[in-house]
Structures are given as C-alpha cells and as structure tokens.
Image (cartoon, rainbow, N blue to C red; front, side):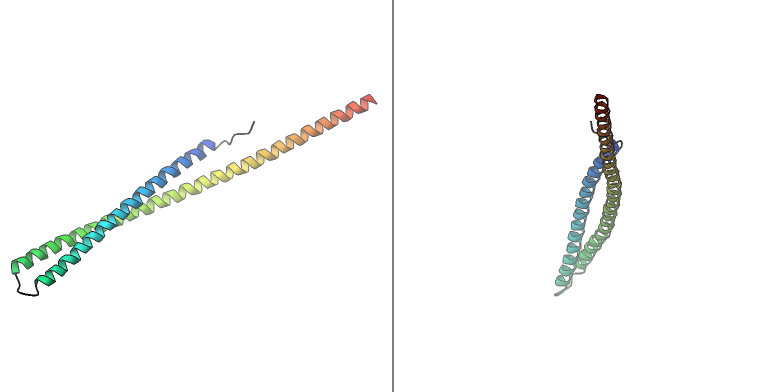
Length: 149
C-alpha cells in the first residue's frame, strides 16, 4: 500500500483556490477591458463633439447652439474623467488578483515539492525495507543450509 502524503488535503485545497483565483482574474480582466472600451467610446464621443462644434462655427455662429454644445462637451469630459477612475480601479483589482494568484502558485509549488520529496523518501524507505527482507531471507537460507550440513 502506497504511503499517503500527509499534506495532500492542503495541496488539493490550494489547487482549488488557484482555480477559483484564475477564474476571478479572468473575470476582472474582462471587466477591465470592458471599462477601457467604454472609456475609449467616451473619448471618441468627446472628440466628435469638439469637431462638430468646430464645423458648426465655420459659418454663422449660433450662440445658443455653441453654448449647448459646450455644455454637452463638458458633460462628456466629466464622464471621461469618471470613467478613467473606474478603469484605474479595475486595473488595480486585476493587479491585486494577479498578485494573489502568484502567491497561491508559489504555495502550491512548495507543497508539490514536498510531495515529491515525500515520495522519494517513501521509495527509499521501501527499497531499504526490501533490502532488509532480502538480507533476512538470505540469512535464513544460509542458516538452514548450515544446519542441514
């Protein structure tokens, strides 16, 4: 019967935590990408409005129209600034999750090395016991031959 690694439950737990953390990191990366896309969309909208304002002012100037466009541009710029904060927060979450995953991977690798070392020691112990048994059998045969002669 093979010797069971004493820390196997802990190793299995670390593997489950690693899987969960990888899933979490994947979700956070997707969310970060989504937030970046929203930011890009808002920045594009702001640029388009500035260009539209410039085109609208090529001919005669409508003060009310200019004022409305400027208010809209200001509002979009505020949205851009808010979205930049959201994107940065999402990025920080991704980095925190990545750091947690790296820590879990290191802990799991340590446990895997301990398991490998335990298996090597168990194999060496089994080999030593087999050698002792062979020696014992050889001694028994030798003593029976001595008695028989």
